[in-house]
Image (cartoon, rainbow, N blue to C red; front, side, top):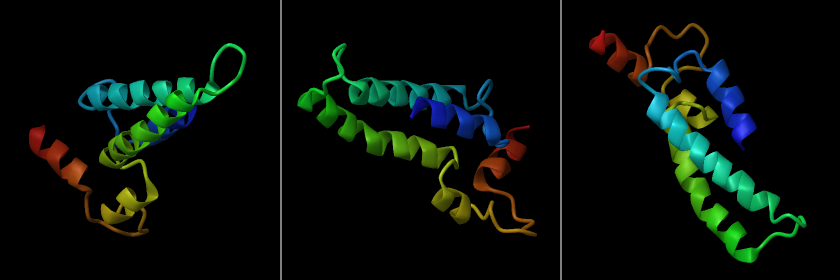
Length: 100
């Protein structure tokens, strides 16, 4: 999950991973790391049921962070970011423009 998150953040020009969004990105990375660790299992490669269960409970939180950063197809569609020829700015961009 961490690798996928890092790729998505890198390709998302609206995510300021070194500035305003650094905390949000760090939180998502921490959850992704925990999920990856739980799914990889112990040193012998076996998965402990309690670790997998914990990882399952983290996934909705991880997903919500991704939605907040507009990294999911549904969140981009809702922000009208994926529609060609759309001049409307995303909510995130409107907030950033107001803060500048």
